Length: 539
Image (cartoon, rainbow, N blue to C red):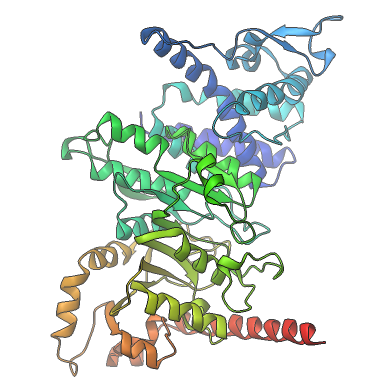
């Protein structure tokens, strides 16, 4: 069953109820909806587990067996201290209670019960969770609407798409600089990195798990016969989906248990990521609450957490931009000079997280590519001389609106070896109107062509090397060799090496010029801040 317009309207209606009822924070609202989805779905999941165990003659006990000691005596008749756990089925309390009684039961009993259940599973995404929607009329309306979605009749893709529609309502950056990465940008990066079945895939700043979900969908698509591939409309664009029906049962088990890994520093993001993955059938994927810049894991701890000790095959990420970490908290492994800038530290961490030959696709602010501080230059030197930088894709200014106007690029590299040449790709349009909201689909879209050019990189390199240097170069891709990069302080900004045509020289996009000025201004501010820190240390 595909995601229907009625389902989308119901989610929009829930959003409007919450906003009008005094709950304006879209992140908290998405988190609360994730809990309600979980409460709804657990009843069906428990029934399936019970039936499967019976067929396989395995021991299994329903979570709804036994009695529950009440946290609030007002949730039962006078003198009663326990209730049957069967009362925690959605079909019982969600359809039988309303108003004040519903708020009291959900707040005091339902959250506590499912936190206890989650505590016994691979990931306790209910840890510290509480009911925020405590206005009786609003909660009653929201629970009724969630019940009407019919999630139990939807397949994993539909449930996931529905939750993505919830996440789309998040229109603000978090306090730590994190924000929802546009899904079409993620899909392009995943296409270029091309994760495969049997590889381990990691996002150290997972947010709502967009990269992990896209990698999962990519692997399934690559392992689907043409007859079962479908075109699905999302965010005004068509995308191809596959069921992965060529995957063996062992490969499916590996996808569910030993493929995807992630962290985030924000408990809300961990919960949203866990729900996003759970709805897609990836309930055993661990998204850890962890700051990778300030903590390390030894091999024993990695083994306890089931993490691959030799590193990951693939790292995909959009780490927080322009954040800072207290220099005394930064672990030695990720240090690059004396910088405290998170965008530099994260790239260093990602290099270290890859196994030899592993691949990385990471979104970085433009300043990382041309910044002139010692830390900027040293990081780029390490990338070019100790790794194989394959490509840099310049994204249009405004792709992260309404969260941020910062100009960004995608950095794609392999761990180990040394860089011979770098492919530069330039996107003028990403398929959406580059306005304050960046959510109106348009025809102009460079991303599919640029992703295909990267996949065909070796052929493009031959074309580049055999070109006539005096002829006009009109392609949106070009190359620079390592010697040229070294003479430019390892600068990786795409515009530095672009063969300028007469047309481009006369009609350069003013937005592009403004983006470059903004990136230079951000770098100046960063250097001033670094000088302040240095002067403070010297005093």
